[in-house]
Image 1 (cartoon, rainbow, N blue to C red):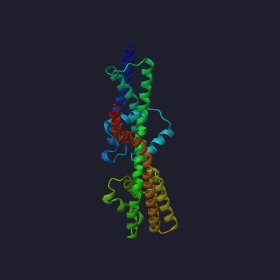
Image 2: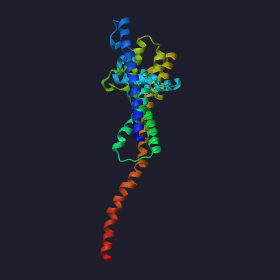
Image 3: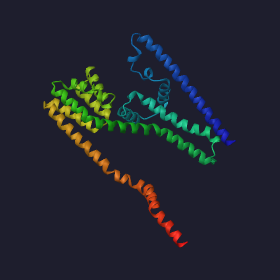
Length: 305
């Protein structure tokens, strides 16, 4: 009876919250669409910067839920920074927060629905503790995904930077300016879909739109969250300010990056011995001992029998 009461309360609360969110955001979306058609009738839907015009219905629902969730300005700014570092739009912070809220409700709800079909027999206190644990896990899962994506993207940028610098050196030596060299280098098929190439293209588009050159480069460094890119941007600013040779600076910086990449590979290779220790001890040595000592033990057993 207690379990049925818990299920009834959870389902009722979930239905009420879901209905309120659905009605609120569907009506808001319809009103925004009508207002946009009224005041900007000649603007194509592709050029609208609002998140609600570019997201799927699920993303709109998550964004609406995220807007209702109270969150500090510092946390929102931190999420926006990491979303930019993961290659996502900063406007997607509402979707990210909404996914945290929905998952923190979805996992406990799924456990309540599947509990009668499982072989578990939990006490009331254990059941509530497990529900709270699932809610915490659901809330933290998007953060783990975001951190993992930022890590992989930073690693890809780190490995791609020397190759793009080589293309920049070739373009600059051919007489191109730094902006034209960035566009030409990132248009190479080798860097198609590469995050660093996309960041360079975004920076070039911002410069063409009228953004100051130095500010656009610094924003690119902030978006990538990679120290090597920040150092590269600093080098660009210094060469532009003091009039030093850009080609020589790029060549020296590219050589240093390749040296660091080789050192990182050697460090990772040196750590494989320690990582292989536990699989060897727990999996290979027992089988080796059986193969070597097993026949001797059988022979001694037969001898004494």
